[in-house]
Amino acid sequence: MTLYIDPPTWPGHGRMWSHLVSDVSHEELHAFAASIGCPARAFERDHYDVPSHRYGDAVAAGAVEVSSREVVALLTKAGLRRRKGRPV
Image 1 (cartoon, one colour):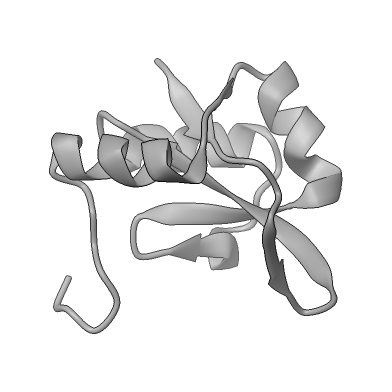
Image 2 (image 1 turned 60 degrees about the vertical axis):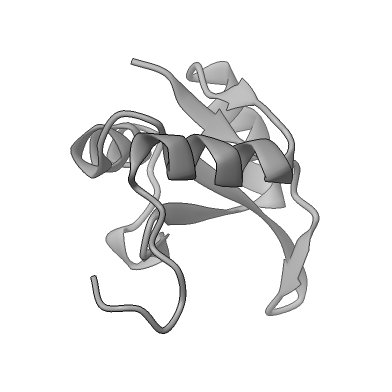
């Protein structure tokens, strides 16, 4: 099981955020996110939004650090990319 996380460079709600993704399945992603305490409400289409103060927890649990571009490429290659405004 390999999960990926990009740096916390996305602003929102007074914080910086990372994206946590799987290149295998959403089920794998949900299981990993739950194991590090991410609430279900943090899931958005194809990734979990992870606040910067939880970034280290994800990496310590085994998430691989990648760039934001790599996150998109991994999702696309795996067929898991769900763009905004498109049906799920």
